Length: 192
Image 1 (cartoon, rainbow, N blue to C red):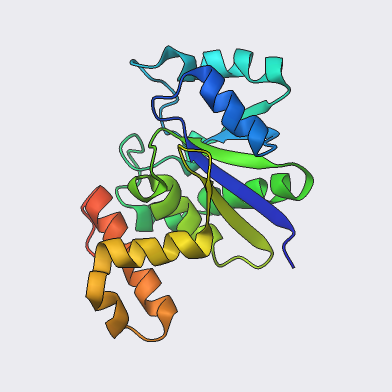
Image 2 (image 1 turned 45 degrees about the horizontal axis):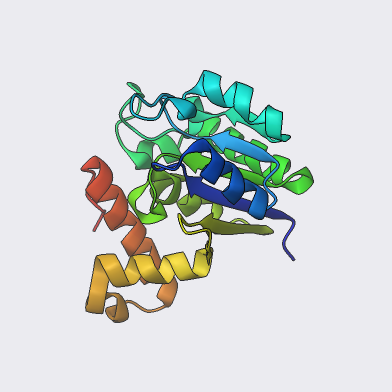
């Protein structure tokens, strides 16, 4: 049974109207901003202060959680996704998102268009995907939704190719693909 459905999306280079249309189409009630630095020089509509004003005007809540769920880069005390994933405050923030999803329809938002290119997959979805009662759905730039199982399969195909078939059971290949994605993003090398 799924108790919490959590969407993810990247604002990419969408204008605000397009983003609002995506959010509305999927019934998103709260945007949880997971950018470590909630600022965009090229797209001022995605600065934290702008989102705090514009989203509520369309009956969509806004929460910034990038201080605990943001990627590496701006966190001086954690250099890798593995280190962040071991932190208590990170897991407390994941618990808060799951609790939010039990009562509302949230979307974790970052900047990258493709979830495979973003820490919202390599760090956050990697941790949430195995939680009982949690379903992840990734809103793509064209408005379609990629369920977590499809994203996992795409991750294995793109990052491991034919090597993905060498791992049994399937979960081993998926976990290896996540480790490879984290390595590509942060320079951390997968164990083993």
